[in-house]
Image 1 (cartoon, helix red, strand yellow):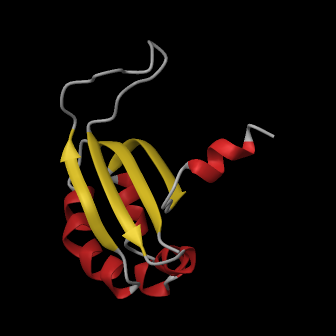
Image 2: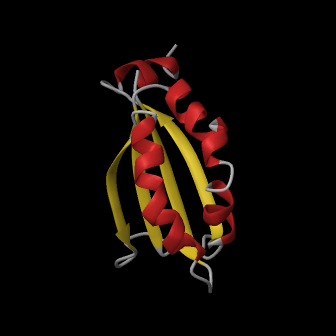
Length: 112
């Protein structure tokens, strides 16, 4: 079952993420991942209250299954790649989500 990795972050004041963005497409594709969406922050429709600081950049990556995402993280060939992401960004939030075909099972969990 596919999983999605949602990345929300701000760019750091250096060029490390630029280097990461040149190298990461091949590393992601190697494990079967694909970028579904990426973009800069637009107008906030609901910022979640004053305690939530919006991030400037969003990237959504689809992985064919959780193990493919894990392989991306653990691949020794990416040992020098991940620090570029880590040191080239600030306020990084990274979540994974399972693919859902239907929300009804989730709603049913709370009705019993």
